[in-house]
Image (cartoon, rainbow, N blue to C red; front, side, top):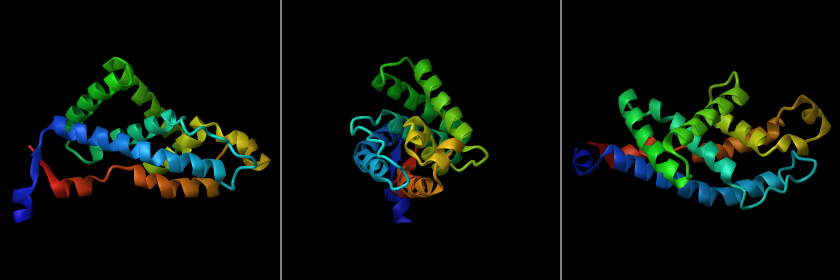
Length: 179
């Protein structure tokens, strides 16, 4: 009982701020591990040699995946309000107008859905999107390169890591409630 009384109430704007800041912190701290993991993965014949500063695609994939999961966490109208605030704030960060940024995210959602078809599992989609956005097919052995499909061992390793980039709403709701 005291736990629910002591929870801090947050507005949609505050939720959006916490969400965005946490995503950027996660991307910033996680990319150093991800690019090393990819560059050193034994599934590749030669290292992709992804640059440590090349986190842009990774960041957009993480943002897109987490935005896509808002509706499974909130009521539809509240998810739409939070998403709109997130688009407003992120459009400024990315130097785009709100419509351009929303279109960018929608294009990434379509891309993730397409490369992940028929699966609906967002973690799998994130791994496959990273594979394609970083052109990792070029570094695979001939068998998988001809198939134009990720080596399943690489995907399994990526999936195990990508799950850590999904926002933990259960932990959030243990600490906060929405006003």
